[in-house]
Length: 413
Image (cartoon, rainbow, N blue to C red):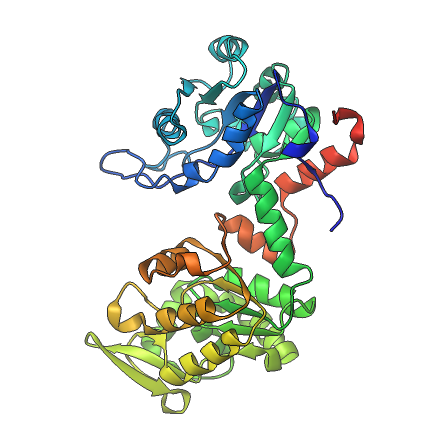
């Protein structure tokens, strides 16, 4: 694969000030305001440790939550958690830019790490401007003039065009961090030229995400087969003319799946032979699991899982694949009676000899619940960026790194 951007291997960081954009955006307990899961912080340890070890003066940029949400909090505790994970001191300034930030950065010694305040505390971060205009804001100019390099390790935020993600690469030599590099390399492996047969197993609730992926991977010949389950499958069955019952149709309408009715029909007409839909379903009959074939529909009980025959067929296809992309659980796995499909399909992925890529918070949560997390090839830290990339769309943060690379080798040591 042709080189697309600089990496940490391309620069000499010793004694240099490096702005590092990470994605520390973590779940926060609304009752305490405390970070409840440090996975998003932990994942960036390799990049930060490597830069510090190479003698860089590391300045960390990150966001947390959205303005108005309970999770929109300071990064002070993130800096404390990072220090605990690294086993060494980490500085923190409760400002994003300004005199106190400038003073703290200038006082850094080689190997030091400094975390700045939540970048979403400043309005420039979310300004709707092109990168070159964002680069002219006080936020970007103030920090850029203090730095020698910019490193973006925030793949999970790469689908956003925020100032800290796209503007610094416009004015500083820019490189991908280790997580960014690894995520792109892995996603390219399954989305550019995967080993065949390539199977995408897509479930969950978000038809807009799965539809974008399905249309792209089938039109580009990336996937040989797409297995659809979850609420998304119910929507596809509705498009094919099956009466699922008013209870289930109401849920599909509530999730706005019907807005994709026409487009879904087009995809089914064009690639129907490559799209697998359930042949039976499991519904909740007063807390008891009951199964029903498509010919026995409708059912006025909530459908919560795929049925036994579908599980067997999907599992057989997955075990024979060479490449698997897994996103979205097939059923309501949080309820034991309706975790069957998720557990069986995920076990089939784990037992296969395929390279398996897993993405999505609920998917990874299910893997952990069933003790299968370490039996897949790769779990991505991303959500929206993962979907966007597999849908064949451009990611603004990666485009920024690519444009920096295209400027030539004059920045490379």
